[in-house]
Amino acid sequence: MRTEWIFALAVSAAAVLALAVISLALRSIFQKRYEKAIIDYQNKLLSQEMAEVRHIYKTMRGWRHDYHNHMQSVKAYLAKDNIQEARQYLDHLETDLDDIRLLFDTGNVNVDAILNAKISLALENGIPCDYKAVIPEHMTVSDIDFCVLIGNLIDNALEACREVEKGER
Image (cartoon, rainbow, N blue to C red):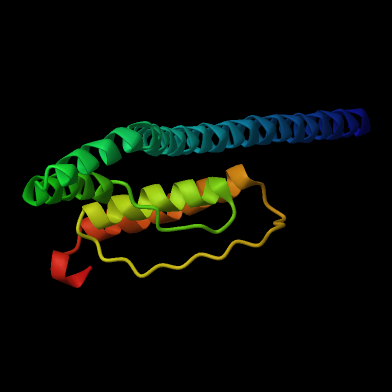
């Protein structure tokens, strides 16, 4: 009877040990899946942010490239005393510039790009914004993580505002 009891105890101990090993393995698997899901989500957000930054950069480069030509056109209208045409031309340029809002200059290029893109998007969607940003020169979090965090917070706020009546945003 004593050997049976020892055998049962050994089997029970082996079962507990097996459960512990299985539990640790499952925990490790779930932890890795969770970390992968977070990384995938951050990569998705970062890709969206980078697309927005590329769009702003491309638009700004286009403007910089065309600036000289625009000035020559305005000078030509003015040289011929075509004030009305010059005014219309400048009004058209101003309308184009309204699409590009440089609202932030914190000294952190990455953060400025994200904030400019997101707040411009909010304003384009009729969402009033009261904003100010001051970024410390040295942070304990990486620019990528900080931009993902800011982008996610603003995206969540924009999504919530879209669900509210325009006058109550």
